[in-house]
Image (cartoon, rainbow, N blue to C red):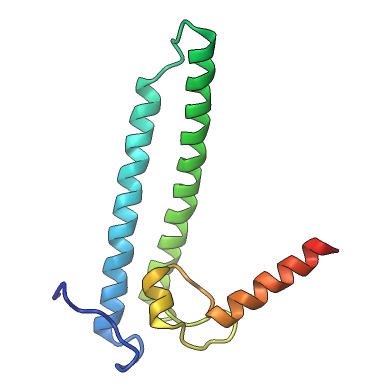
Length: 134
């Protein structure tokens, strides 16, 4: 596949070339996250809490907590990427879960795990805000 290809609004939505573009983009992103995650695990194993100084120990514990939170976020992101890859495989990728309308190419390029069109996403955010304000 040519690395210079960029999907555009003028071509047929989710044609085989476009689908493959997003599939590869998702696979690359997933591989990066998995690699970062295993590096985090290695770092956590190496940096046991052997710091003799209480301040150093507290600092190490804070770092550890941050790394674990980051790893949890990465794990959730990998699950969303896997779900997007499933949608690529079953042909539903790129269509809004709520309206069934195509999601804008620019949105998918920026956030390939998007499941909602901009309009549907904004509706969800407005509803969440009003529910929080109650």
